[in-house]
Amino acid sequence: MTTVSRFNLSLLEHAPKVPGKPRHKTREVRVGNKVFGGSNPIWVQSMTTTDTFDVEGTVKQIHALEEAGCELVRVTVPKPEDAGALSEIKKRIGIPLICDIHFDYKMALAALDHPVDKIRINPGNIGGMDRFRQVIRKAKDRGLPMRIGVNAGSLERELCEKYGFPCPPAMVESALRYIEVAEAEGYHDIIVSLKSSDVLVAVEAYRLYAQLCDYPTHIGITEAGKPPYAVTKSAAGLAPILLDGIGDTIRVSLLGDPVPEIAAAFDILQATQRRVRRPELIACPTCGRLAIDLEKIIAELESRLKGKRLPVKISVLGCVVNGPGEAREADIGIAAGNGQGMIFRNGEMIRRVPEAQIVDALMEELARWEADNASRLPPADVEGLGRRKLPVIAG
Ligand code: SF4
Image (cartoon, rainbow, N blue to C red; front, top):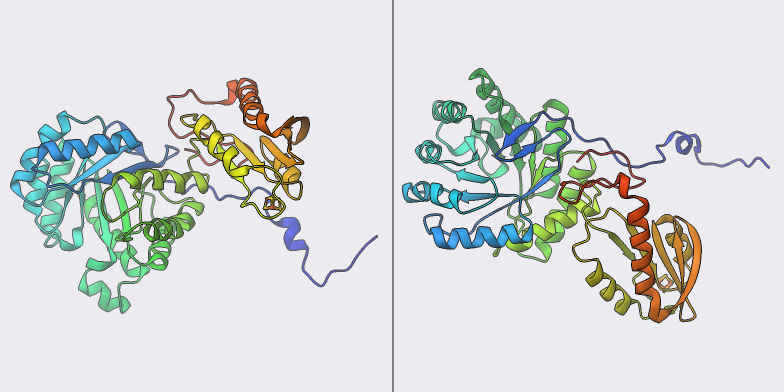
């Protein structure tokens, strides 16, 4: 039967069935043992909160960050004694070390005398193009990459006047200017950030930039504040950027201890499917229809899945309303009913188990899934796992 709709259904016919935008094509830039850009993973980084000259305190915090999964770390270098501590810090850590410079170009030059892996400067507050060029020349001589960190809060006055206020086009023009200066020096090991504490400004700035330039991007929402709001705000800003395919390294900026930044960053990458490193657990919020003790099951499942680096989707739903549908969409699923769980594999119901055996049954199915997919899974030590049934987004 042909039905006439008042809606333009041809739009749906031509819409992509598999969602997800391709990744912003960026050139590759090496930072220590990590390569940014191209199809490499979106690396997670953080920044210490210690005085950098306090080597013991700084190394201790970096070790805690490494333990949490941090892949690159930045330390501030405001004084000569901070620059003086860089060699010792570098010796004692296992991840690339980035020095962060504001205001004083001499600190940039001093830091570059040490075995750092990258320098981050904000050219807008470094004291003019000549000083910026001196830093570029030294970074080039040392063969080191640089992040050109444009910040809405410290944009050149001239660009603020041209555009009226520190808006996305002004930020992007600022970045492009510095890029051109660096390129004129024959320097191309550039990473760009366009930070703002305003989510809308940051998102638009990165979108604009990605249309114009191909140096890799460091993404983040600056000065996000105190968790938990800061995590939500970061996710609100970083998700659209990531979903647009933009971003080659990520930092979630939280007030206080930087260690929780790492889990937050990996969660954002996982939720946007830009870097899936662990099983995706789908669980319903529960309601009056709940037929099993879902919270207990999920807690046990989470603990048994800890450390498993598999891009598998597992759904556990509390009743038959959405359970079978969700279970069919997942790699492995459970739909509960009457104290039992119906187990699904790749959309097929394969067996029923009593509630007390649901977790064991899911773990058995997971072992089977892992064996069946062994040839498609990257080795455990390879970063940036892929994902199933999803658009191919490298990294
Ligand atoms: Fe409620 Fe069932 Fe939906 Fe869970 S799946 S929220 S129990 S209706």
